[in-house]
Image (cartoon, rainbow, N blue to C red; front, side):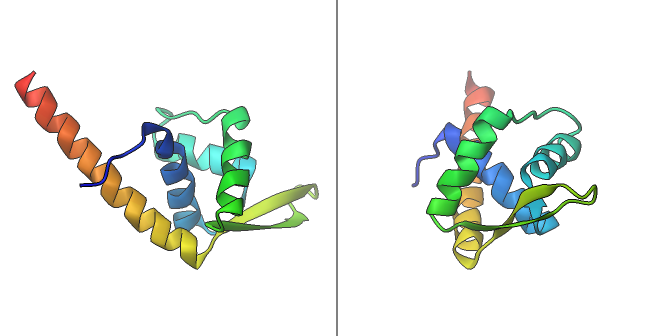
Length: 108
């Protein structure tokens, strides 16, 4: 059984966001995670941008510069085929983590 790294949660959230929403800039990713989680999850920009850079180096995401809806230049991120595969693996590992925690809570 695969072990899940809790720090991998941010990767999962970003990859899932991009799979659901398509191309987004960093701030758009942060907003989607907050809104989709009913404001329960908050991603700090200081955590997000190093994670985006790492995921881009791993070729899970790709980026390009474009103008935002307000006319500002921003880097937009999109999921790659390799990122889709990583998302599937990360989701499966996370489900195992949740299952393990639920089991533990029942017996603790």
